[in-house]
Length: 289
Image (cartoon, rainbow, N blue to C red; front, side, top):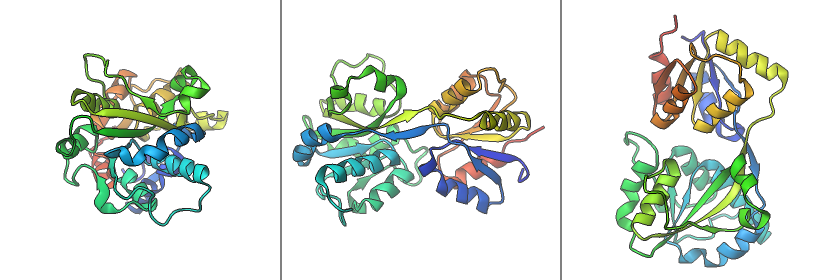
């Protein structure tokens, strides 16, 4: 197993901890990001949302990128040096995973103000976060979601919409969505007022021909790919549309990501919690013929 190439696919800034952990465990690992993160200019959103942020009960971050780009937007707006403490000490800060928690701590958020699933949770996702926060809210409370846009979402919004905090309608689909949208759906069912601010864009990376050839070779040589996002799987399929991954090996950090991998044709897909220890265990369970 240690001779098998492991391919991480996380955005560049989110990969270092996993790279170090896998290398420390003796794996031959590379990180080929399948999602490129681009900062969105959120000046208008900051003008609208920051003066009233202390009226919110909580601010939810969907990823460590959401934290970093929100902090960047705040600093650009306020023209301040990096704060020693986050500007809103009375808010609760929601995070589904450890990477987001670490980003909040780096930003100066007090650990006691962070809400996340317990360390022994079956998964680190919106469902587990909801178990933690649901009893802390009352009807008409307000929650702000800090998030990113996919390429198609970004293109669908005009400049005013994409830079402003967006109220999220009560008229949600009857069927609950997935991911952070599921958490928003749950909040709306409880008559919690939800707004969102988009601070970054997720793009498909511009791979060179050499990068594509390396990826094709990794597939043929039975590398194990680690996917922590369904979008990464979709982007790989777009970059290598002619490649057959039916004999490919993957570890997905959530059941819905595994379902996406199966949907596009991946063969062996193990599901793991998104911690380096659990990922290593999942890797060791894959038997390559």
